[in-house]
Image 1 (cartoon, one colour):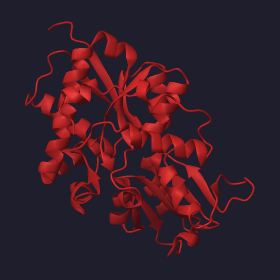
Image 2 (image 1 turned 180 degrees about the horizontal axis):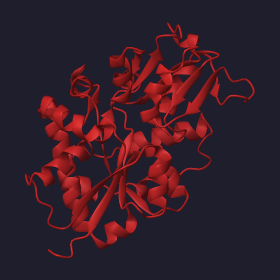
Image 3 (image 1 turned 60 degrees about the vertical axis):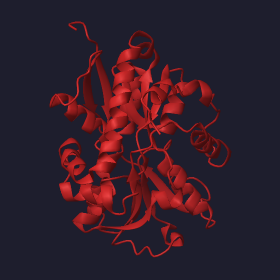
Length: 312
């Protein structure tokens, strides 16, 4: 088919986006054929870049933080949530130089988060407020723990270069956390799955006009991504080899993320759960006050492709 559209899908180099790497490799090695489109994966370094590229239509779709996608909808960017890309898969890492033994020890220190509108921010907010600590930005009144937004890829070096121990740690998608742990300057403090079992985080969104013009292309991409998620769980060692290349990480680090424990991140159940998205939206609106209004999640989530793909 000579006039197949090229579907550009943005992503970060994180394990949350590994199903895209597996799909991309299957196509390149001709283990799978896309009949209705060609796939182009586009690496971005931070979440603002992903959001901006969706908004200006330089991307057709993206793997993006669920609450960030909701915010784009509020800004009248026409996108639909097609699929979860994983469940769980993030980690709270403490710096070895910051003397953190318990949650209360984060008081008076900086913690790095990947984006304000992220499940990472939500989970850390919940963890702190349950101990009576108030997270916020430096300079805000009454703040106990100072949050600083930083692109995930920059976090390990920020911890490494922080000789004074001002940065207590960071909460981020894997394998960024395990990378800092393997390098010897971070320690695992909490896995996100232990803060909220099977939580969503990143989602696959596609622009409305692509869904309208090329529904068959969206379907075959969704079919492949669902299969990729199942394959990762079935063969984590093989997936780690692909992940090392796709994410630019050490194979041992990626394999650890996929296997220790085996539910650190899961990719076999990607069907979009609206109740989980509502939990995120409600918490950010009611408790954190960083969402000023809510969107209609029933309109935002388009489950037809996940259903057809047999996603669980």
